[in-house]
Amino acid sequence: MLDVARTAVDVVADRIVAVGTAHTAALGESTVDRLYGVVAVRLSGSPIGGRILRTLEAGPADPVARWDATQAVAAEAEADAGFADALRQLVGQLPIAAAAGDGIRPVDRPARGSGLSQTGIVVGIAVAVVVLVVGAALYLNVVAPYVGLTEGARLDRVAGQWHGQDSASRVVLTINSDGTAMLSNRSRSCVGEIDSPARFEYTIRFDCGSDSDDKATLWANLRSSGDELTIREAGKSDSVVFVRE
Image 1 (cartoon, helix red, strand yellow):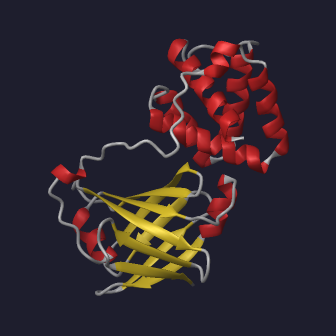
Image 2 (spheres, rainbow, N blue to C red; image 1 turned 135 degrees about the vertical axis):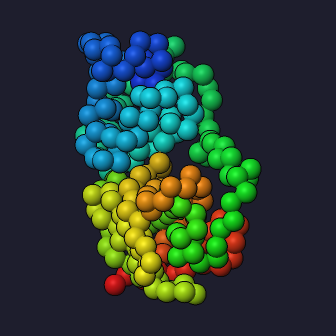
């Protein structure tokens, strides 16, 4: 199913590059346009899918945007046999040249340079310290190997209130099933929005209301046993473990 999803996304992205999005160039009755319509309707059915679609439409030549969209389409197809059949039928009707693509099929998500190594950011050991020091935006990647195929299932799996303890205070992480989130300690609360760039992976952006433009990247591993979230700074061994309340 992944190959079908890749072909579908590549064809849709190539159409956007050549002609424009469905908003700037109305969809017609061609197989490519019908495929675009089916993919767009499916991804637009959820907040996360909608953001992935908008990212693809804004940068159709971006390999990261294509990869993320492919993973989302594949996950939806695996969860819905009707959607999978519609994809297979339309991809099977594509001209040979369009279906063949350029032959480049990255297995892993393409890297996107962050530039963090040149910023000179000093990040505290504890999550609360990071929240206080870093400023406006915090990014969390949650790798969750057992959270379900669809976006809704993945959000439901991690939705709820989690609490942990750092060296200074109690830290509370709240994840809502609608894609919103909040990270707070006794000094500050940061509202956020959760995104899913790929299957089994989440990205959360927190706005802490600071004037600072500094950014930090944190990684969180969701362990299927025991319902624990372990959040740690990339490259560091220190971590804060969150459990469900």
